[in-house]
Length: 329
Length: 199
Ligand code: HEM
Ligand code: SF4
Ligand code: SF4
Image (tube, rainbow over all chains, first blue to last red; front, side, top):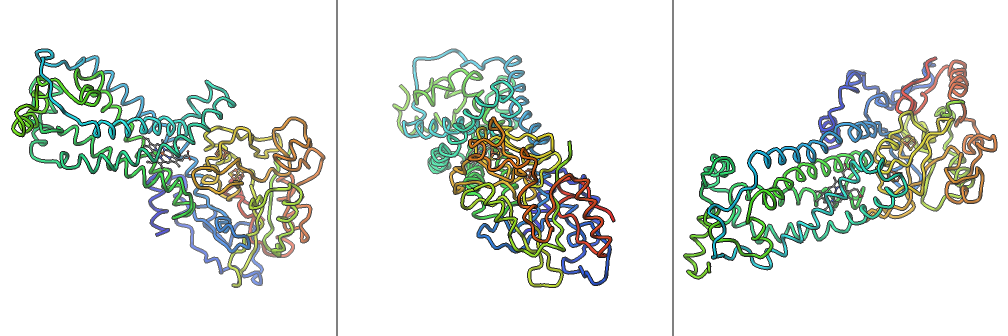
């Protein structure tokens, strides 16, 4: 398990080439040292891995077992990851995605309700569905902002605010990240239970994706309560949310299930999922707000323009009307 | 200014923990915090060696590079110190440190670790006047300001633990190794300073 984690860490952090030249060093066993042989050495002969990335463990007389790790050179790989790749991934997720959406907005503009708003509306989300959506959404925003602050605040906000103010802000953001995590986890679980039946991928979604969801051009593919894109958002939120919950709990209760190397990995994975999810959610927020007229109504008031619903969720409207002819009024 | 380093000659360390006790006493560190510790490799087997380890005051210190609030600084003696007023207790420095040096006064759950504490090379911290009571309460002793070396190394009964100018302690170690004919190495030097002592 340990070897697997190490190998994985090296791949994940892709800073491995810097240390690769040590791979072919002969493995001198720790017990291979014999002072009587009068070997003149002053290098770390007992522990060849010291120059590489092998951790050295020993025996300790104090209760803190983490102290038994004498040297873990991997800490430097983690440092290099945080100083380099992490910043680029964060920039791609936030600035890259922001740029794409802006370009899309400029090219395509706001997608308007075809033929304008009508008089009739249809109920789309009940109050409980809206509650769980906004519970998740608000807590997610706090988590995303406070998480980004931990990851990249040092190179963005810190120079603007100065050390004292930045620390004062970061303490609060850190505590909000730790506690707002719980409403977020509750929201994700609720959404999973309530919405999963509308989000099983099917053949209609394949056509939907083939037609790029009608985003380009003015054709509208068939769609049930949730279209292919929305189902994707659902699964990103549920799987991403669960992944963040599990890794996040690991960070919240450090060293309970894993050691130092595991903690580094969990931290990298948590940050990675979070940044991927931030990019995806920026797209979701865009299309739900400035990107499309009428989309926000569904989560704001629970009812949507019937014409809009017929254009974007024709199969669902047909289903609702079949259930009760008065669904729309 | 000198480049201060630690060097533990593992062939002399007898695991008496005097350095650990001296550190605790000199700095009045709270219960549960271990700025220095002794780790025994190959315990009870041939080739057993004990190494006294604390913050090595690394070149390009990993702790300083990962701290989200950038609260570390390096003194003219190349000692790595941090500002407890800025620390938010996130624990990242412990993940990055190759030597397990950063310590936290509180239990770790829910991110409530408290302000990080670690070896200061007995040179206090950023708290105004050197050697003030305020500095002592927050960071411990400032022996460097008094012209003295860290107490752990001063107390070492076998002179296994050496502290001081890196060049000087390296030459002492080199002489020992060539005289006695063996040496198990300058523990942590590769990781901390990207160099080892050749004899
Ligand atoms: C679901 C429950 C979650 C838990 C329990 C959790 C917990 C944590 C913890 C303990 C940390 C370490 C930093 C600290 O102590 O303040 C952290 C870092 C972070 N979290 Fe979360 N988190 C959760 C959800 C999220 C979500 C939803 C996002 C963003 C969409 C997110 C983004 C981040 C980021 C970006 C970092 C910093 C990573 C880095 O510095 O590389 N987290 N999280
Ligand atoms: S030994 Fe650890 S705490 Fe000390 S300078 Fe190096 S990384 Fe920082
Ligand atoms: S625990 Fe404190 S010193 Fe260590 S990285 Fe976090 S804020 Fe910086």
